[in-house]
Image (cartoon, rainbow, N blue to C red; front, top):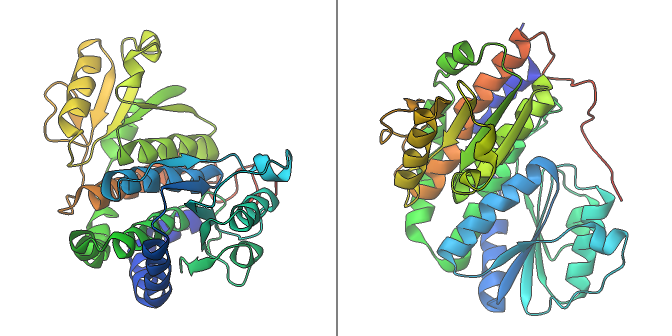
Length: 340
């Protein structure tokens, strides 16, 4: 019987197309507001998978718009009552449910402080929408599995579409237009070789650089959520500053590399870890010693990085079931975590 998680992974291409069609007017309006504001900086407000989506958007904004982006701890508003000087900036708040109290409180505080705030949410109307200057329905549709998949991807697609409207990036707009067809190919890729090699390991590293670091972080979280397996995400550069000490013979390392300026260095690091005896895999044709994992090239470095998560989602759902878990309902988790 097909799990909800598997069904929702398969729905990702359709969900991305639906978002780009149905939310286009709201994305254009929010993009105009950012152009008019011309923010000196941008903040993100999110937790969990949504925070990994925010990290992806952070890199995209810094690389494309040239504005520094920082993640704010939601507890600054909900617990500490801090008053931040945000009038010169903008904010992106991400919440699938749209009702996490600490996310809503921080969005309200950012709006009150004078920032242009944009909510990316799968639930309208919702408190997060009311707390923000603009609200974008990510149109992922109902997500029944506890582990977020299509809402994670659509949050990033919405962020990239917002960015393309803000800065008038026609290349990015074109890449987003063709993205659903690339995602159709990515969702069908087979990473079963990775499952066969992992065997009974109980810990592994997930690596990435730039936007792909956000993908590595999301992948590590999904291992924990669906399979109770210890996984840590690191920058492919940072792993050499201490964490490499744990890499011994057949220690698993998966490197998420996109077709961007960081690919060559990420592949080189994956090869160096393979040289230490690690069980090293990478989504790159540039590796020599590490093993290549299948990927889909989209023709744009940002959408190329995003597409990497789809074959991983398919892999981890199957891995979870093979280990005797139910990926739809991890015992220690619930769909909406309402922290203060």
